[in-house]
Image (cartoon, rainbow, N blue to C red):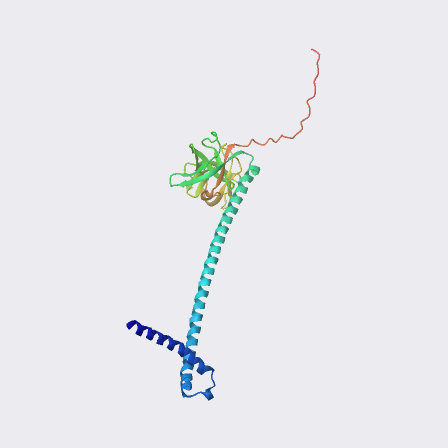
Length: 294
């Protein structure tokens, strides 16, 4: 019995819900002049209700449209950001590749600019402290090529000298190392001096004999008198001058950025001195022939 009453109530509710739209539709399509009192009452009540339902339906529809649109925009935003990240990574890779190619071209051009016998080496690390400053280099060749004291240069200038050699790498004592001493000269005046390491990024030169004063900005280069570094390789620029009674002491900033080194060159043998008589034709000596005995 309870089940039958529940079915009756359910059926009545269904009929009511179906009947309300039918009554509202009948009152809305009919002519108001021919309506009876019931239809007019339904029309008065149904018009605001219909407007409310329409407004609510439109609002709900626009809400879902905005929600779908925002979801699409979010997906598009994430896609564009992903593309931007990929493009940025590609740009960084291209910049690094360009810099590596530039360094490689400069290094390869050393073969044409430097007459000395060179051996290329890859820089594997840099170590600096108040007591020593070295870079580690690796040569991808078999055999014992390196010797202690060999000069090391780069495309930018002088790096240092070979210190210790190990099985897998060699240590290069930088020109800024306090134990480093290199024969140099002022490129403008050719005044000789000795360059000694001072700080992590500077060195000091004592000008031995020079009547011409050294100026800030002067280029310091190797003099070649020590038979280690070939003559004319750039060492650095003068940043300060301290004139003494017995000479001049100048501060020098190295031309090489040691923290940015990728490749260096080891000077295996210095170039021979230029033969100034090469290509000069000499006359044949005059034949004396046989002379009678006297």
